[in-house]
Structure formats: C-alpha cells, structure tokens
Image (cartoon, rainbow, N blue to C red; front, side, top):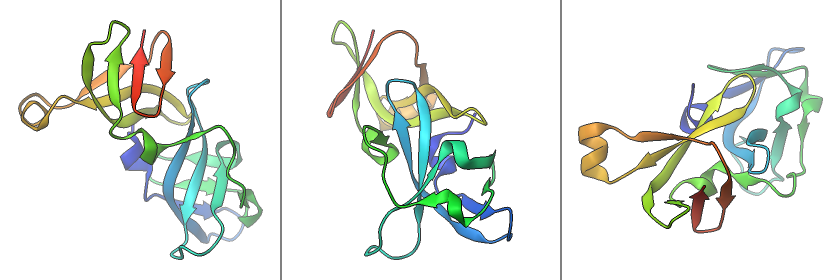
Length: 152
C-alpha cells in the first residue's frame, strides 16, 4: 500500500486528451470516514485559485498516475471539513491512556479505494534508522486534534 508521500507529485492525466492537468500537491483526508476525498493539484503559480479533483472523479487511482475523464473534473473549491495531508505530518500520536507512541509521519493508503489503513510513525531518528518506522493500523476510535491524534 502506498504512503501519502508516494502519491504527492504523481501526475493527473485527462483521458479525453491525454494531457497532464497537474501534479498532486496535497491530499485531502476525511477523518470521520477514513477516506481520501480529494487531490489538490500544483500548477506552478501560487497566485491562482486552488485546483481540486474529487477522489470520486478519478478514473484510475495510482500507483504511478491518476486519470480523470477530462479537464472538467478539476474544480476550484476546497471541500470543507477535510484535513490536508501536510497538516497531519508531525502530529503526536497518543494512546487513550496518554502514552506517546511517536510522531505521525505519513498515511498508509489502500488504492484504489482511498481508504487510509494506517499511520506511519516515527519514534526518533535513531530508532527509525535501526528498526524502521512503524505502521499503526487505524482501528477503534481515533480523535484528531490540532496537535495530537489519540487512538483508543
């Protein structure tokens, strides 16, 4: 299963013209359903409106490219109530009893469903190098805050 960082940078291609519409800049995640809901596309200009593709509009979903039927699949409205992938990185992961499990480094995503199956966490540079990063399955109740994620 790919991680969020492996999806960022992938091209989004229109099937009707075979043109690249942009590259994935960020992922929008729905904490309540555990699903990716949209992709934010980079277009090389920071002054323009956001370019968003709903996950439902994707005809093919990775692992090396995304495709949509045509350019009309790209919108300019950011859906409300979703969390950006970039905002998730660095949050503290805590157990229900307050034990710190590590820092969230990434999402582990099932494609093509878009279901986020686990969080990849870091327990420190030395541990990451010696043992690798851990993947904590998203099971049970999960509370998302602005500074921490609490798993029950």
